[in-house]
Amino acid sequence: MTWTMAPEPYDSPVAVALWRAYYTEVSDRWYLLHEGRRTDPDELEREIAAYRGADLAPPRGRLLIARYGGEPAGSAGVRLLDGTTAELTRVFLREPVRGKGGAALLVRAAEDAARALGADRMILDTRGDLVEARALYARLGYRETEPHNDDPYAEHWFSKRLD
View 1 (cartoon, rainbow, N blue to C red):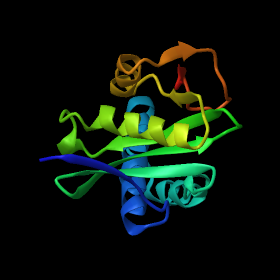
View 2: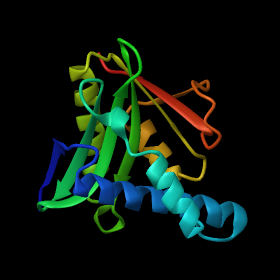
View 3: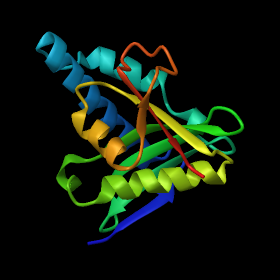
């Protein structure tokens, strides 16, 4: 099976389904760790509806969809913050395809998309419990930095030069 990465409208059915899967997983993971429960279904629906991803649309953003063997398997978003800095977000692979090399390919495709937008630096934030993500970013050359935002769920911030 092979991986492919391609831009996708943030509001396509594929993108919406992957956003739901991503948000459900990271939300449930946080609540299980901190409160011993899954996300309340009403809260989940409110949060999914509150952030559809319009900032991942051209001309200042891109949403990439990873496919494994032709089937939607993950996503990564890039949004241009200023003329030279892009932010990586929504990096996600469905559980059945993890460990098959797609995560690094997806992040590298997002870096290429950021370069195409004019960025020479990528930043991102993540949580402490997302140890797999932190390991991936470190392996791909991202360096931990001082906070660049005040997101209440962000615990680790990373940056990488793209030039």
